[in-house]
Amino acid sequence: MRYFNGFSLRGEERFFSEYLIQSDLCVAGFSYGAQQAVEYVYSTTQRVDRLILLSPAFFQNQKPSFIRTQLRYFKNSREAYIQQFLANAAYPSQVDLSAFLRSSTDEELEALLSYQWENEKIRRITDRGTIIEVFLGSEDKIIDAPAAFDFFAGKTVTYWIKGAGHLLMD
Image (cartoon, rainbow, N blue to C red):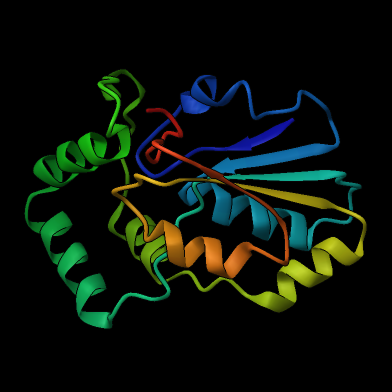
């Protein structure tokens, strides 16, 4: 399986073992990594049977001022931003994500916040026979999970996990 990490994280795939399939024909990504996984599958000529998107970072319904504010906060106080991000990502669980922390750049955050999910890319991937599974938590404090559900439902196999946050835990 090829796995793409979330923003400022590495090794967090262990939290998702019940959702992942250990196969060379599977690609998965968490949050920011879900965006990267879609781009990888869209552009690869390799066979991919399953694309698993775990709490895909979904901000396209946010106003430009939201994105500017997030970027400004990150640039002004990177450490405080990341600590708040980790707390929000773990919510409602009490998981300490500090052991999974990696350094991230302004460019990565801007790419994450500015990414536009495209119906056409989803359609082309599924037309190739790739099954796309999307997992969303009802208590996610990072993304607008209901908006993400509305976007993905009907195009993909979409799961709504009650009581779960961004890490898909309660």
